[in-house]
Length: 294
Image (cartoon, rainbow, N blue to C red; front, side, top):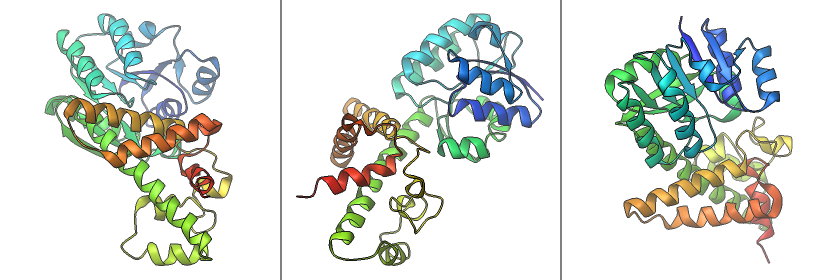
């Protein structure tokens, strides 16, 4: 079992750190928010007074932070304090450029590093069923895989540094677009007098089948576990979907790629958030879609 420092103990990081404790690792954690520290402590995480203190003696450092600037700031702070050959893993969802800068900073100190953003939401974080999309050198991925398997069920090596973030951004652009498409279909079906169950029964076994429909259906009833059955309490908040769609558009602009549906999805989620709904599940976008009808 390893000594692990976990920095960022929020809605995702807290349950992930708890699963590492359950797996028998010794976990030292840090967060700026007291309630997050209290929850992690209750789950067996030893709370440090600072990020630098958390990494002392760690064999592995994991960060789960809001944005690229936070990752770079924390890595700049803690890397000089870590031991030789400490493995650096960032599980945040950030822009590809920031991920590459983080890898470069680790390389300057001869530290192996992995960018490993996740898919699966808070439910997956609690259940230990996350998907990790990893970027980094083969040897670093080989080191990271066993500990990631304590927090997820699918670990994919996507390529060199930054490739994990690229995969996450592309995947969530698909997700954002498809959820809007499914929501539009149900909103249209309602206008045409079609029951939710009838449309689900047809589309879930036909060419309209997709994860947004069969696993996260945006209307109550057909998929009992979907947030639609719990007043859209977030598993993955609309504000986070908007963040990822913005990252996709920044990446598309930098790469010279055309993503017109991604751009339109960003604008729709942006309007949803500006209307005060950033804290509801992203599948709640169906409420916005219905409101667009004249």
